[in-house]
Length: 321
Image (cartoon, rainbow, N blue to C red):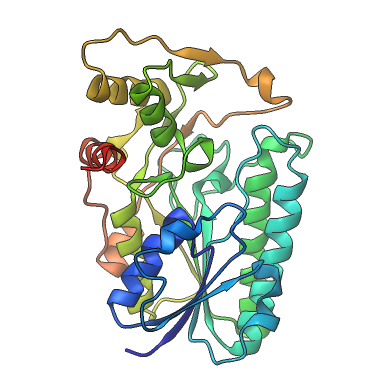
């Protein structure tokens, strides 16, 4: 295959899975990660593998790091939703890094795959979200929207660069990815937190009242979606939802109950509710449900792993089974 792919955030949850998959398919991969959130241990299975080169650095320096030709750039590195911080770093780092990556892709004439988020749909009440759905973002004064805002600005930069500079890109909107290899804590999402709490026999922390609903996507399905975009470059400069079926919609509190029952079937479920006021001026999305019909129709891709199956695989991974 011999195509050269650069992955920012290669030592993260998604990045490490993707790197391993692409190396197994014969791609040459250069991974960039400053290890502020990523973990070098996630690269143990492929760090010495032929065709892989790792650069420990912030991706904002990408133009000075890679001199060789690059066929595809996959930009995964990102700050997350600032529940406990001000949101300043989320905006600053995401926007600055994405701008550097976009300029690098233009210079190298590379295809750029950008990891965006379902969070950009915001408060849009029209469910399910499809790629043409409006992005309804809340008040600029609410730090909750700095993450979605930073991703949306990058999406707009990509579209503008496509029109003005001929950049080829793909925008990938991920819906709550989970699975084996997740890091600890809220950065990895509720599945990991609820599993850890249940295994330690601690009460699961529910933000708000837990009635907010989500759909999620298992890591293997997400990786196959990204690979499908690499393999099918006839439709570029597009937006793609990568999510599970609408039938998999579940409330956060029901997700916690499901995990509790799987891990501690004989113990009473006693959640700990944390009000949003504990996060400062914060706002939650009531429903986040997408449809991946576009990817199914044009990429022959769909999510195959049910939530029950994915949670069981994740639980077994944590147990070391």
